[in-house]
Image 1 (tube, rainbow, N blue to C red):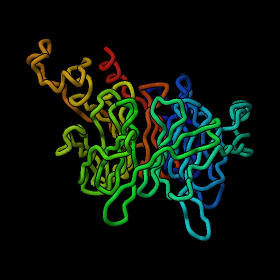
Image 2 (spheres, rainbow, N blue to C red; image 1 turned 180 degrees about the vertical axis):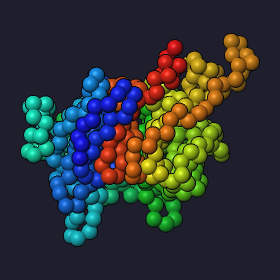
Image 3 (cartoon, rainbow, N blue to C red; image 1 turned 90 degrees about the vertical axis):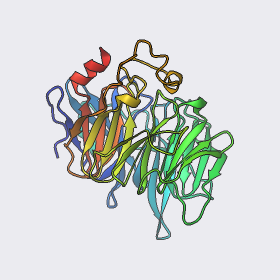
Image 4 (cartoon, rainbow, N blue to C red; image 1 turned 120 degrees about the vertical axis):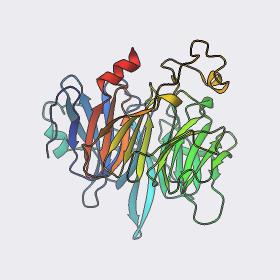
Length: 393
């Protein structure tokens, strides 16, 4: 397996993990280096966290490996405050049944040392993640994902386990976790959360969750439901993301091959629907700085970058706030007669040959993103330069 290829400027850079994988995150607290974390899924070997550093001047990938002996990794999240801290959801076998657990980990302080002189060292002789605490109160198992409080101090996380949303306080440098409040999905049948997103708006007091074909909004202060989109998708909802600049806008994707955009103040109809994928859509991500740029990843082996400018915070090519947009066009003297810019598919990326389970924007470079397919292929791509300059200029 080729570990790093050097390529031309806008060309993708591809890295093979040698293990199956589906968990990917940017290292949120790292805003200088371009760094992603990948978690592996291996039944035969110890599972690993691959720390992927992208050197954008030379267009090469450097990797470090840490052992995650606890089990195969289904979800990974990075602390917004401490570069060394992360969460995983993983499977382990106990009494011959498989349980999904969640835990908080710390990278060893010297994981970076020596790796650059001999890159094979860390692979042959990897260090092990340090367990800080389990997110397990004894009552709720089967964690689907763990969400860090956006822009937070790294002291609050939410875990979604079966039909419970648990809000945890991390104390004593994250070595202790206590449940401060919880919400339960009520209803008939076997209800369980599949994914969720903690909103960066409203002082981080709202959560959106997906279960089956429904999307729900929760107020974290009262742990009560504030909205419900019953049949948001025709089949299972796989992923959610909040527009970073428009507080009521939420994107969703699912097994009906669709990507939908919602205004949660009016949940009868989506504001917009994309039907570009031909199989399940696993991941949807808004760009953190330029919210018209939306990434979607699918089992059709493709990653699609869309320019959803009409429903962005810059529908006319400049910033317009939510209030102005809600009041209709009366206030837009300078925009009179101007049509919002047209939405379009910018690029379809076809470097993967297997289901693309995750896509994430870099925390350090707004024009760069990574995608991960099940065969362990990680691809780093950039927003096409022509579009980048059109947005900037």
